[in-house]
Amino acid sequence: MNTKTNTRMPEKNCRPGRSMANLKKTADRYTTPFLAILFLAGQLLASPSSMYGQIAKTGANTVDESTATGEKQSVWAVPAEQKVRPDDKIESANLVWSAASKKINLSGAGNEHVPFQVIITSPPPPGRRPKPAGGFFITASDLRSKEGKTISRENIQFFLQHYIMLYGKSSAIGETGYWPDALAPIKEPFTMAAQYNVVRNRPVWVDLNIPAGTPAGTYTGTVTVTQNQKTLETLNLEVQVYNFSLPETTSLITYMNISKGWLSRFYNKDASSPEMDKLTQTYYDFLYSRRMEPWFNYQLEPHIEVKGDKVEVKFNDDRYRYYMNKLHSKRVLLDALPGELHRQIKDPEFSKGFNDKVKSYLSQVEAYFRKNGWKDRLVFNSPVDEPNTQQEYEDTRKWAAMVHEAAKGVPFLSTESPVPDDPDWGTLRGHVNHFSVHGNALNHGNVKQAIKEEQQKGGEITWYISCDQTYPQPNYFIDAPAMDPVMVPWITAKYKMAGFLYWAANFWPETPNPWLDPITFISGFLCSDGYLLNGEGVLLYPGDHTKRFTGQPDVDGPVSSIRFELLREGIEDYEYLQMLKNLGDGEYADSLVSQMVIDVSAFSRSREELYSIRKAMAERLEKLKRK
Image (tube, rainbow, N blue to C red):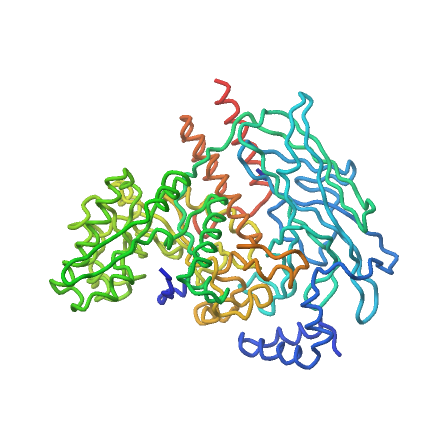
């Protein structure tokens, strides 16, 4: 435990021969992404063989393994909640590692992922165009307990961390230069090559999945790093497994947007093709494997046909059974006015003919969910995203009225605070059941009070992070602190909210390629006080570009990121808290949350504190389980 094609863009809050080192310093002087991109693009065009060639060969294993320096190679380890950059110093000891005993110490429960990192340090040889050391590979043994129980090596996976060059900062505490993010599954030997350069540190992400029901005990094994099939270092691995397992289902509501339209555009495939249908399913299955769910599940959108005054709504029963009965989806968020219906209605908005057709659609959806016993998981989403005018507030109330009339008992969600920015707009309270609140709003006392009041009435509150939420609030930027994604579920728990939302995990339309250019949301520059938002809206990478940028085989589906995996870590922490509450120790769970979080702008980013709290939760759960 270390433990529709939704292309709507958020408006109000923007949610949505010199050496390379010298080039980077020069690029840092440019204050806009446009100028910086032009500068770097010009250098690439001026010297394509020396610079672009290194991009194409990043991670390839057909290069010289020699370091040609007096400094020795080294292998060491760090916790998952730490971003290791190329020139970081070797650590002799930390929360999971002891160089003296060459041992990695971990702990976790059954059905929990316990990630850590192994770092290969290989000082690059001198010279203008050094050849990177190569031929590295990493493996693990089975883990065995004294009682003869085994965790198979098949449960340990290795991922090469792709270094991406950041030519601007995301915040006041961000930094330019190389940062690790994408996690390419390791299937082939790898090198110390990165974009444009040779790096000193090569971090490997290691994911240990402890199977559900694994007997408690101490399990030991080894992790071995080789170079050209010769052992470079063997590390001892010791894992304490607790006497409980995390539940299969997840307590948190997670609205994570993976747009089918953005997928089809980047993969250059017809959005309605069987190929795209399969690919979208692959991306969604990946989400569920990380204890998260899609914001708008395009696979569950019903087919709608308007025939005169009649509206016919048809559902894919097999798909619904897969998501509702096998994957146990917590929420299905459907638009109150889906695009397919909107395009077919010719009546003016909010006219009787328009309203009758919309209500027919709403009532048929409600009936289908009720018939199958899923009504408690259905939510209708407001067609007005982030309402920010008096007219938008009025329209939101009209939509809420239609939903409540046609689909009695089905909640209506709006991406807005219970407290309007302008009192003249009126209120959405009493109309909207579920509010998804912008993170900045959580700093205001009247909003926090309104949230408590809505929760007491049975309202479901979620929250979201966007580009204009600046430090010390958390964010998902590549150069944000590693603890930020981990703490998102903890902050959710502090406010007793039901979950969180993120506007995009695959916003690739504004970058040539997310593997190459980290500035993924260019217009975010306008709402971020002039910072460049590295990785905004991109928590996943397209797997069909893996080989080009890492040397590892292409992936049929998404490639994860450090940020995405750390978000799962926080979700698993939340499950510990929920288990404590389910076992009658909610007061203790709340006290631990209060130790970690004061509010959205004041929370711990200390790994030491996190690991101490995790240990305390596990010990209390073991004690409760023994009773």
